[in-house]
Image 1 (cartoon, one colour):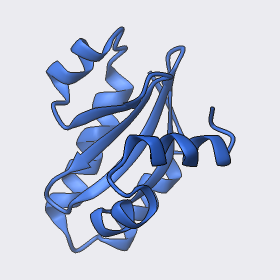
Image 2: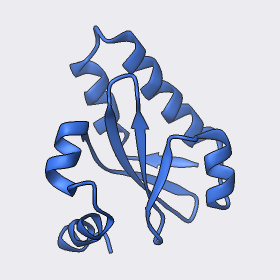
Image 3: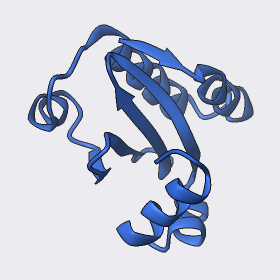
Image 4: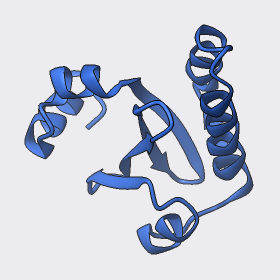
Length: 112
């Protein structure tokens, strides 16, 4: 699968280059996305149990637990796009742990 906006993940790695567990977890996420072509949520959750479907149009949050980093990725026709990333506090401030707020944010930012 092709991963677009990988630069955001690379920037996060550079910002946290001293945090080896986080950089390894980000590399693993990139590798998992690029090496898989998940057909459905079940397949995705088998290889990435940290994936949480937040919108039926193919938007998933990945919780990189070693750093409480949240990464929102859209899957669409064999392509994955990094939509948003931040730490858990930024996630709570932006999305309020609420799927309806996530949906509003996606609409406001022209993702859906």
